[in-house]
Image (cartoon, rainbow, N blue to C red; front, side, top):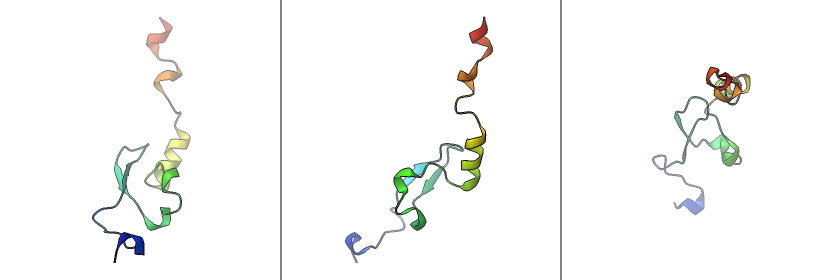
Length: 66
């Protein structure tokens, strides 16, 4: 079978880095249609990212006040 037939070599899957925990994660079949939009490795990381301010350091550090 070739890649055109839908076969994917499990040792050659695309990898991304989670924006929250910075760990690598592999392509999953459930993400086949939305792989370009996937940013987080799990629902937990997605939830933590939504609760955490985007840029804590830029929110106003002590150095900026002096």
